[in-house]
Amino acid sequence: MPLTPLDIHNKVFTRSLRGYNEDEVNDFLDQVVKDYEMVIREKKALDEKASQLNERLSHFTNIEETLNKSILVAQETAEELKGNAAKESKLIIKEAEKNADRIINEALSKSRRISIEVEELKKQAKVFRTRLKMLVEAQLDMIDTDDWEDLFDTEMGEDLELVETKS
Image (cartoon, rainbow, N blue to C red; front, top):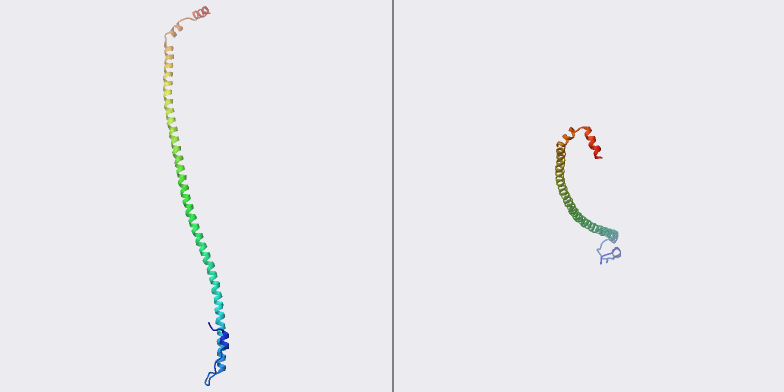
């Protein structure tokens, strides 16, 4: 067990013939007691300070652990978000490709229908042209017939008689 200031203060030395001066020894012991008390107070203060520092260190260690966990969670969340974004972008691209394919197929189908309609209209135009040509030629043939000459050769009086007799 360590010495206390009281142990030092109460220490009694045996006297001998050629011993030390008692007043000097007592003064020295008083000085040792004061210094020893000061050392004990300093030790106690340092122990308290060490305890406080250990508490703060523990607090900061807890904060560090919490921050590390938070950073890990944030990193995991970021990775998850990046993964979800990548999946979503792939889905959007696939959907866009499907829509593009559908639009292209619809456009090709419409183009084919229009092409067929154009060809049908061309055929109808050729048939119409041929019929119109035949009609015009028939009308021209009718105009070119000799029946017209006969009409011009007959006189007006005869025409009136013919009309009156028919009525």
